[in-house]
Image (cartoon, rainbow, N blue to C red; front, side, top):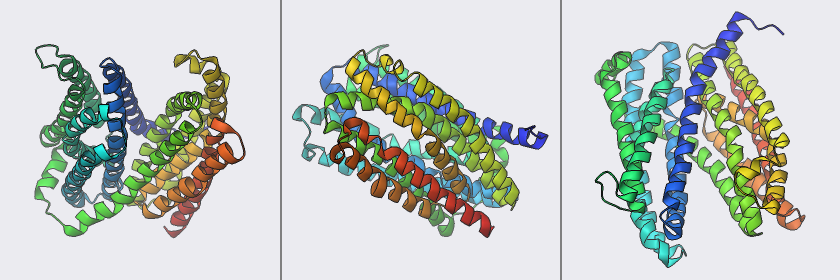
Length: 445
């Protein structure tokens, strides 16, 4: 089938929006791996303390990231409508809503900090865990400020600025770790606390860099002037919060479901845990690309919604789907063809490799439905639709996927690989419900 010029333009636009998001995510994943390697050099106790603290911190930060997504469709709709005065109001109230959530999440983490001694962890890691978390808490507010500006920029179709800032921040994080963890270049040797300092410096840079660019960069001057003229609105402030909370909950529920499955694998044996970690690590290769395409779809849909262009919305969704199908076919070939080779990147244990290969086959099975649900989630975000999709996510993961995983592993006797059986089932239900929701909203336009 020959593509029209209009279709080609839509593919190019979606890719131009998605690729910077994918690159930024790849950079974050890479820095996370480097962080773990550097912390691992400090010893087993420090590594265990960091692992425990990051488990607590990551879910809170994921919620904050998902919460900030609310600003993109709200600004994107006005951008499509060319109601530029309203964009200034959304920027001001969106940033304030993000700052409010930054404070709220910091308070939540402070409570978790106090509760760490009562969480049943080894006494050897408690002190380091609390010290590390204390530094990370101070990084939440600047991170939420950055997310606010990032989602504004995505709302007007700019994904490159945030990508550039995040890549520079990654370099600052690594250099900060090197200096403060190991006492290099004249810095004090702080051990695990130094890793927190590196993260804090990177996130402060991210917030300040975007603030400076917003105020000084010529590409943002028009919006900066709109921001200065805008006023605070309780209605818009609360609207961002009401939309952001279910979006944040959606991200956390998905992450929590995978986390619970990791815990269940731990009930079986160490081999299962190792194989599961390998398969989860490799599965991010697919998830990362799908998420980037989902972000691009959100932006395109929000703009078309502002234009009241129903055909444009359908076209943007189909474009995201088509690009996802192409990558999905590639990743399935890689996983199935390399299932016995890829695990060697992580281990040489034949038993672990054999089990990881079985999990990669299951991972290949759910790639398509995972990609579909992520693109449709992006479309629904573009509609500024969050509460119903959050309910669908809860049903799919916690009512269907996790119980099915438990039954497969422990009742039906499939063991560690059975934990993975719940993923395709839950994702199929989720993608089907999202499809019904998409068609319902589309018919109402």
